[in-house]
Amino acid sequence: MKKFCTTVVAMGVLLLANASANAGDIKVSNLKVQGDPRSGHVDVEFDLNYTADGPGDIVFLAVQAGQDPLVPIHTGGLGNFSGHVKQKLHTSKSVAALTPTRGTKPIGIMVFACDVYDQHQAEVWIANHAGYSLKIHTLYIP
Image (tube, rainbow, N blue to C red):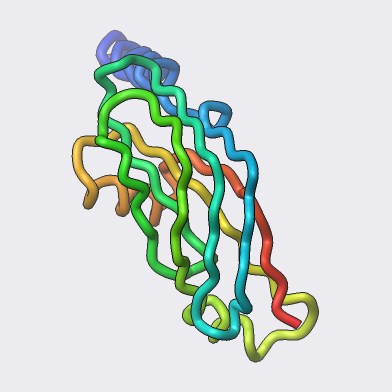
């Protein structure tokens, strides 16, 4: 039994060590954010570079504002991605959650990467904080 447990732990460590995506593989530049989050959405525009571990890796990229729905970034699904992203991000759920609070009321804008086999799995991983993420901006509600 001890040998079996050691093997399972060693395999888990190897799987974690071989995970191909990480936050360092996500690079964002030329970020522009326009709009008032209280209106229900903001427009974001940026250049995104994502380096996959291998050219055949299946990768899902997405961007999200606060607690609002993920917005997929269409990449073709395989390997590296380098391109310009222009998306409208919903903010109404995040604004509603922050309205009764005091202070600066921040809403983070995040880019996510997941090496998984389908969009649903990527959304579940991200919802459970298992995807890789990079905070690219913070909106503040006055």
